[in-house]
Image (cartoon, rainbow, N blue to C red; front, side, top):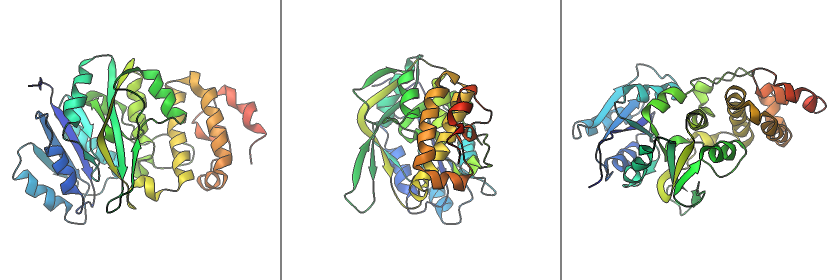
Amino acid sequence: MNNESKKVSILIPVYNRENLIEETIQSALNQTYKNFEIIVVDNNSSDRTYEIVKNYTEKYENIKLYRNDKNIGPVRNWLKCIEYATGDYGKILWSDDLIAPTFLEKTVPHLKNEDVGFVFTGTEIFVDGTSNKMNAYFIGETGIYDIDNYIEGVLFGSNYPVSPGCALFRLKDLKQSLVINIPNKINSDFSMHAIGNDVLIYLITATRYTKFAFINEKLSFFRAHNDSITIKTEEGILALLYDIAKAYFVENYRPDLIPKLNSLLLFHLFKYKNDAKKLGIRKVSDFYMSKPIKIKNEVKKYEY
């Protein structure tokens, strides 16, 4: 039997998922690794989500259910889950997604290596009621990789995850790496649209470690549907908001990467020109809270 001394907190923030939450909870309950708790925080749902989960708490002692008095937005609800957790490790499971029964069994051992900041798995993105499926985040063989591979890979567009829904972290890193509202010049409330806060969990955690782990197996399953944030947000808006999160990271943690990121930001300014105007982004420096020295002259002629 595997050593299960480390307790895992499976964190499920939820809002109005009465048709999906049971399947998500069941995928958590089916874990072959048994030392886990399930923390569900209902963000004041207006449907039967709370009642459905409450029925589960009457059958399973390791499911803990909490409810907010009012809707506090998605990111603050993530934080609530983290604050209620009592485990050594934290696994965020979005309320519309699934994990394979062996997810914890396969991921937990990698965090025994103190150099490893997080471990993520291959993922299937699927659409209910159809045969539409797509594999994502398969970066190579199962193993340990240099952390800079993730940092530069996710910043500059390679096949690395932004969503922590396919990963396992130490709970302390989730607490320290979650940015509630990313500072920005366009007055966008990142705590409410939750675009960019997710990738910062990875990136900020990455600054504390030298390695990450990858499992070349399909152990995470992301559901694509019209109510998911990534589906209902326009492509350009999505990319530009993630760019603000990336700029926040390099400005505060990796200023050596600013020149390289600026090339991507400039490309996106042209590719998503109309969306940039909608957001109030007119030049590369608008992605940053301050003006990094190396971008002023570079972009002056491109302002519109």
